[in-house]
Image: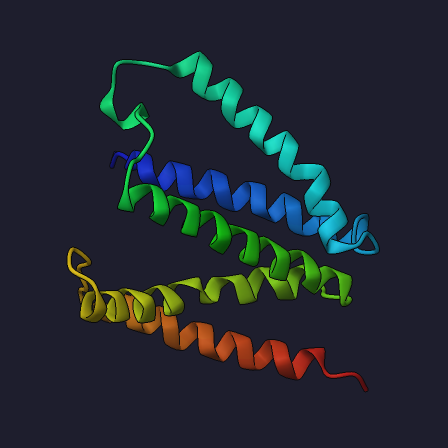
Length: 156
């Protein structure tokens, strides 16, 4: 029996949690202002992170806070997460269907490939590898799925 790599389990768990978020945001919190909702859940996230960090603190050097350029990059990640969450939640404020948002979120690999390529051209230390044929087939299927969603979402 093949062993599932740990990183895949983390991704599947994240997908499960995001699926739950799609349902909650699309059915119960879609009328709450995006920034108001974010201002309510961000302190909860911060508290959970600080508690988890305190409970799992080790001598592992990865627990040290980044410094210099890495600290600035980490702040940039925070801004990117803010923008992503804002857009994600705002979709529900504009009557998004949870199943449509779920499928559109599958476009992430396409953007990942683009940004990976761009970063490898612009910055030292970023590596770009071409997608393999299986990944390309997935992108084609994604494109077909998005086209079907667009067609199926048209208002009669």
